[in-house]
Length: 153
Image (tube, rainbow, N blue to C red; front, side):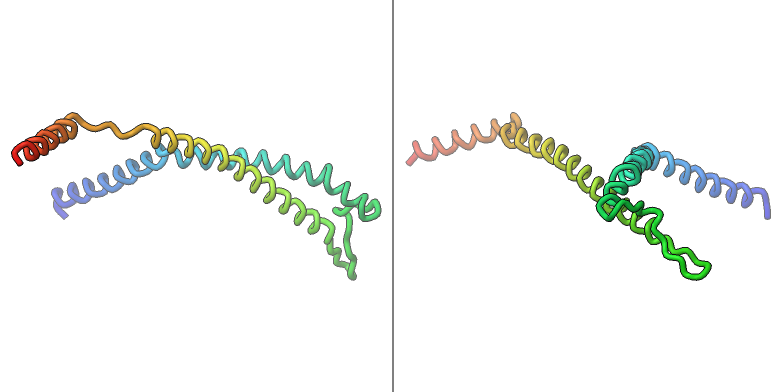
């Protein structure tokens, strides 16, 4: 290969890399990555709170209701195998509570944002659209032409 072809290939590769980097910068600057990171961090903290609620409050209450047993210790021993169905039940309860809490949280957030969107729409509806000077001038000319037509009849 001669030097011109090599330089041309290198230049094309540089453009591809620069395009990729530029696209990545655009992706990051949109805020999607930041929103995702915040969601993951808040979700992790929220999960710890709900897990504590299940393990420290609800599971003991359910255990009292079913005769003072701790659900997480319920197990069935078959031969050498130990089937811990109590931990499974506790995980199901944990999942249902997390799903319910997220549902309530999203419903609350949507209500807040929908109200603000509806208020903005109402504000926009209340203000009649302003006419440009050109439109006002054209309407005046139209009205004058109508008057002239009526007076000529």
